[in-house]
Image (cartoon, rainbow over all chains, first blue to last red; front, side, top):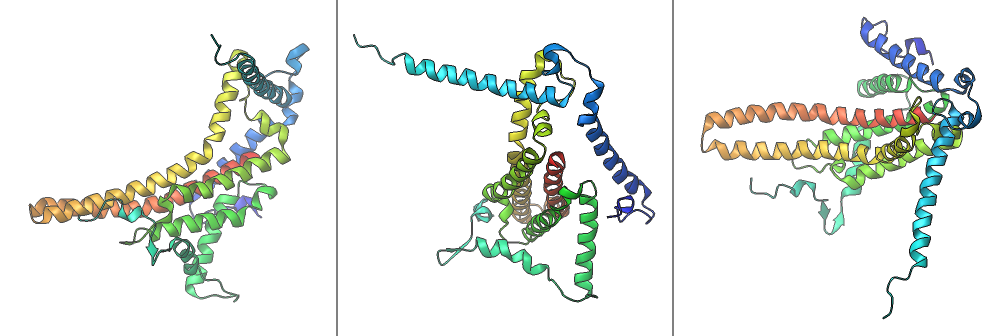
Amino acid sequence: MDLDHASPLCGAGMESDCLLVRAHREAFALIEIMAGPEADAQFHFTGIKKYFNSYTLTGRMNCVLATYGSIALIVLYFKLRSKKTPAVKAT
Amino acid sequence: MNENLFASFITPMMFGLPLVTLIVLFPSLLFPTSNRLVNNRLISLQQWMLQLVSKQMMSIHNTKGQTWALMLMSLILFIGSTNLLGLLPHSFTPTTQLSMNLGMAIPLWAGAVITGFRNKTKASLAHFLPQGTPTPLIPMLVIIETISLLIQPVALAVRLTANITAGHLLIHLIGGATLALMSINTTTALITFIILILLTVLEFAVAMIQAYVFTLLVSLYLHDNT
């Protein structure tokens, strides 16, 4: 697909719409470059920050997984605790 | 306005059999196909319109995303034609039913998300945490981003349902008001009638815009995941 002339309005005098499509495409490309694994190399963290940070792809993924894991543990803890304590004590 | 206001939103039946399947399939009859190289005017116009929409919508996608071109074009054609046909008097509009719109939104959204998790697992999971978030805010933001992801199909469906239903209700109300005002005050009835005309024009625009918005959002979800 000829992406430079992707919009049928390109070359039809509708330059602003052609520019809009290009700007849209460039914005998406920029987001991909910013968030891609190539960008991780510019960050040099040490210690636990190497694995848990909000800048690199791996760091963000580990933070997300840690958050989900913590929530699962909290839910499990309350479920097990409610099973242990009897609901009604006989008098 | 003698009829119940919500009568047009009840699924039509004939002799106890639901007609909704026929109504949903009917728009496809309005888009004829041809095996000729040079077509007649109607099919040429249809092909030109499809080409215009598909170029606009699919230009941002990579090769993987462009495999969804047929799906997205069918979606915009279906929703657009269904919404426009619903503007005919006494017709039933399937896209006023939340069940129908959820039935479209959930599989499409889930397909995009599952594609993302299968092909780019790390990036899909990392997407739940915006880059540069301060450390104390991380757990809260992860929860918020998860909720915002899960709410996407619901928002898609409810947006379409609410817009089309609201438009139809307004047309009913203002049409009924125009009729009632005819015998009371002709000038006010005329003003109400002009408002009704303007509203109908707006509803034509809304019908096409909502189809475009629905498809564009599915396309954006797909772009995030491919």
